[in-house]
Length: 245
Image (cartoon, helix red, strand yellow):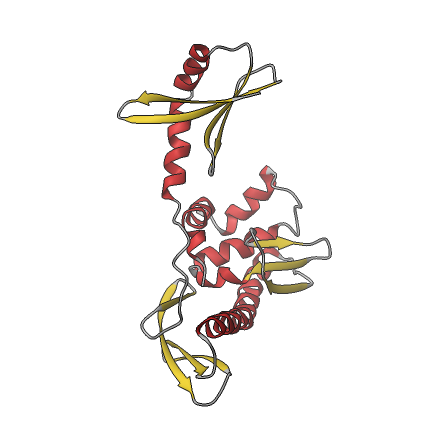
């Protein structure tokens, strides 16, 4: 089974695609965010027939490529120095960095619209950045739990259902999740997003207490509280990578 690479001009744009020969009986067109456009085809299908299939699917392919191009990359790692900014509830606040003499301690405080970061002068640059990042994550978790609990109460009353527990934690890919024991888990990074986006994730998970799947009834329930939920999904899809420190 081999791999072939071709190009097809559609309007003013070139579509590059890879052909992977497989044991399957039909031709499949896939868009992979990392690998690009992949055509999985049987050995007997010639390249002209594959090209015709790509032409027919070109609008779908271009749409997928354009959607992917909108996604913002991860920001440059912060050094946590004065002048840099951190996001909280959709707004960006400046960092004010201060030094603690003869110390290896790190202290974080949000005061008068600024993140005050105090670090010991005995820390190496690497130690300092690691400890500040850890302390900031603790800060987001602590403040995030209080904020999200208040928002959950607001939507509890409208939905008539309560979770057993709320947790703010590290999650690799998910913004939120709902466990079988009715615990709602939220990614601490969500606290950097706008409040309207946080509300959508809260409602999304609360509705899973009523519906464990993503059925039509589930989405109807979500839309009663967040009518523009698709816009919130798109915001996270495009901007999610930027919610990083």
